[in-house]
Image (cartoon, rainbow, N blue to C red; front, side, top):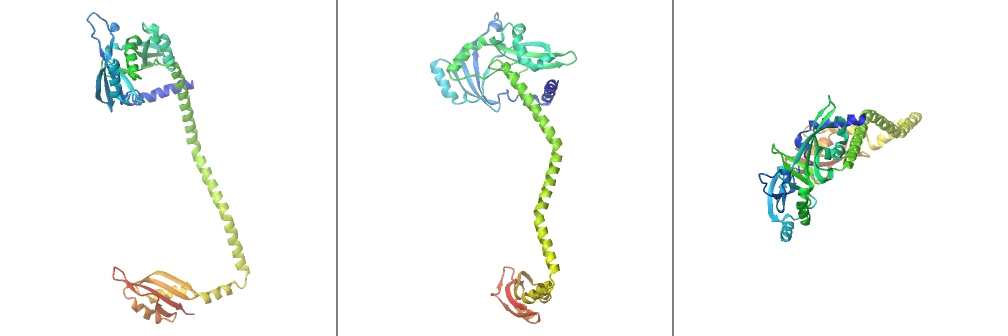
Length: 359
């Protein structure tokens, strides 16, 4: 039941895909195309009796649906050498398409049970001699589903085939020239091309396809379970990360708590702080004094206080006036330039001043 549902579901999805994309793999947009010369068919002859000229062929290079002629060759020994030189490496590693005249293509519409869809290649292969005058090994063929009649449990299939006997001389001559077609194509009534693999369908491909379908179903199930479980996994991961950060901060918290207790227990803690402030100076006092002394159009880019020694750097329209302003305040002593005053491109003085912070 599950396999039937998956097969039906994939078929319905594929029906939504444009035909141009569904046929992309077999479309042979880029390929080496072999066009054989055909014998004239007399009025009394039937297409079944017509044959191909196994010697004269034209090679075309198809790129992005545009074809360029490489030349026409007679497949005798000199012609085969010339053909190999003309096609170069186009016949190796790429698709080689044998373009057949439309009268060589035989088609038959057959009706199968709907359940045969899962094994359509195997069923058509076994029933080929009933559908056609040929056995399956005597033809190159393909089967395409045209319609599914679910109400009556019927599958309408189009079987397209070409007898191998008609192609044998041509394929042998091409093989001697180093050209092995992997795909047959022939025009049909509406101008489109029917394409057939150059090897008869192998029933093992159906088993491979079923394995791929089962694998795809398993992947879908895994993705579904992942989508359901992902929010919970992310929440769990976030919680674990928070717990890890808390654990990493616990030593610092313990150290801070120990320091706080030590400061609270030491009676001379305030004396130590006062002594350090007297030795190094009160930074807040220095900042407040400089804020009051320096004019509004002067700003500092660096300020340092170490053992009552103040070093300040900044910019001012009149740096020379700063020394007098600093010396006039009792908090600041021994103000002097620590480096020559320079002017920047905006005609502003750049200065460095050293001073001492009073008690």
